[in-house]
Image 1 (cartoon, rainbow over the protein chains, first blue to last red):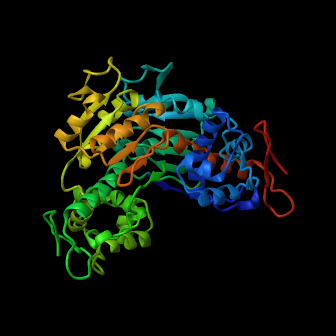
Image 2: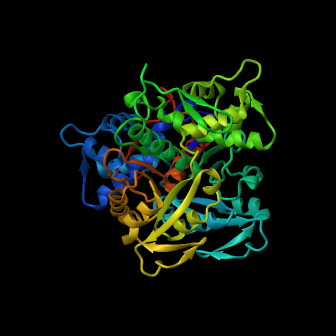
Image 3: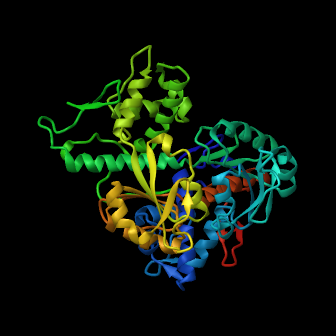
Length: 251
Length: 251
């Protein structure tokens, strides 16, 4: 997954009204939050940085650094107060209010997203579904009726929606993004496999499932190269010299 | 999204049989590849680093650095040969063979993944579907019959599957991961919202849709703080002091 940011970097505190947070820290805060909720549910009142780091799948030095950006340092010999840290992270992430989200495109993936239980328990409510296909408009999914994309401005305003998911085919995604921005949406999670162009002040994150698989493919390829290829003579590096027919030669 | 790596780092060339590539470069190669395929389809034979960088949504200095890791520097005044660069990236990512992938868990999300057109055009073939629910076993989705998870070892061997997608509920994901690893799968793309524990040599990437939304929520929260809060006096920073009831106070 990659991320596009437009306008201000997360780490810039323009006017000083929001804490300075590196983008990578922002990306890890939800992981800490999930681990903390799990700890709270299982009865933990405090947790060491090592324990929380293990639960979130990061190293503890990175965790301590991330939390120090929030002004949270824990107590020596005790660790972090679980409830306090949950409150702190939820505040920074803006999760103290439940955010209304619009979903555009109700094909297979859109159906899955509309029915995804993970959103409602984590601070989000899918408030509206849209499609441009007359055959889909009017369909009821999880209690919501799919609306005509033409009604976007009216519904976005009525439901105070600032975040939208795009689950359309790639060729339709830019037009949908333009419509969303025109309607006042300022954050987009894009599932269509394409790069979106948006004005400053609009944030886009991209989820591309095939790209995730291609990254794993690299690791598979590397692992099989390590186990099946003999180590070459010389400097111990394989030079890859690709040819136009797609075959690569190790020289 | 976050990533767990076990065993060797991607940048380490153990025995020298595979090119040294930083993990972040590996993550961007699929983006370049997609942009290059689009350029090739629209008739481009060469592309400048600026043009390719814009199409992939990264800055051109980063792109040139990434491609230099592959030994690809382009030609001054001409740019990169599109077909050559496609061949080179596909080789490094191990995409010259079409990889068989197993999918475990055919709920809403599993259905969407099983029907996701983006995999087949990008080097992957969903070769087998599994579930543990007797009501789902035997169901036909996109031409494949959902199999009992108990048949995992046999099918993984028969289809030479090394990559699997987990689309089960969180509570079942670790057990499924253990079964996949025992059956010989060495790369897992995890859609369940939990951290998986796997042995060295197994790669896990995690896709958590709620986490992506929470990151966008941060940006929404930051933007609204910038537009609605008055700049405080003093050092220009807002201190966030959370309290146990989830309210945070700006002091």
